[in-house]
Length: 276
Ligand SMILES: NC(=O)c1ccc[n+]([C@@H]2O[C@H](COP(=O)([O-])OP(=O)(O)OC[C@H]3O[C@@H](n4cnc5c(N)ncnc54)[C@H](O)[C@@H]3O)[C@@H](O)[C@H]2O)c1
Image 1 (cartoon, rainbow, N blue to C red):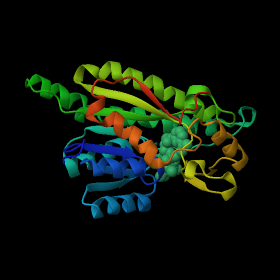
Image 2 (image 1 turned 180 degrees about the horizontal axis):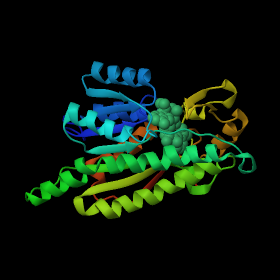
Image 3 (image 1 turned 45 degrees about the vertical axis):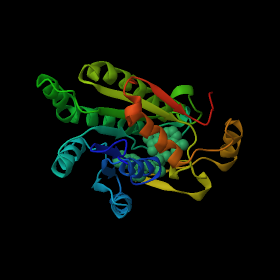
Image 4 (image 1 turned 30 degrees about the vertical axis):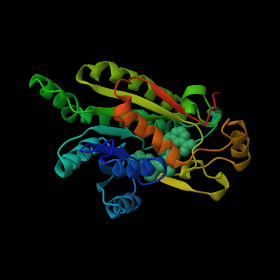
């Protein structure tokens, strides 16, 4: 049976781990050719190897989404490999928590850079392959190919979160970007939506006591949530559990699928029912 994304090409940033990796595998299962992009080459290559072993098509493109040259490089490698672009998932990200009164400018700016500036530059770099390609198809009297952008947001951006003034500001900002892209590019049939995740079990949300770090922006940034807070958060989730990366990937696929063909400018909350 053909998959829901048969014949489409998708770029997923931050696809070496967690939600992005699960989405890359699910998209490939559904017939998409996937560009698995991540800061870290090794996990990205491992996801590509898994996709290929399952009979899918994928390439890995390693690099930092906050590098101003990276978006054009990513687009070029996508075109060289697959010749077009249907879906862009802006998923790459991390947290750099701290209380407002102690937060440095660098720490605040880093979250805007990775969660706002990078998605903006990536969408802009996709212009020739999304907006202009759709315009040309319409000019030829054809129905444009399916094209969409999915931005990964967070409940921190919807409700705020203690210790995340930088992250919550940025994750809120991506919602404004999503709605504006939906309005500017809707005329070309290009949809743009966001997914706000609650608590999904990944490296980002593992117990802070494990000491996991991300090496980024010239810093070693501690990741994770103190285990007592995680336990409390889980108790507040109506479905009674944190989400899995597969739960999260399913929501991204939903918005990329033909069943979402008339949905744009929206934010889908994927939280197990948590709503504050
Ligand atoms: N896990 C959650 O509970 C949760 C909740 C809400 C939102 N999110 C968002 O989901 C997205 C994915 O996070 P995850 O939970 O899968 O975390 P993760 O750490 O498992 O995966 C994130 C991936 O992004 C990559 N990445 C980080 N910074 C990058 C950069 N500058 N350039 C390129 N790649 C970069 C990392 O290398 C990593 O492989 C993030 O945007 C995160 O903010 C996660």
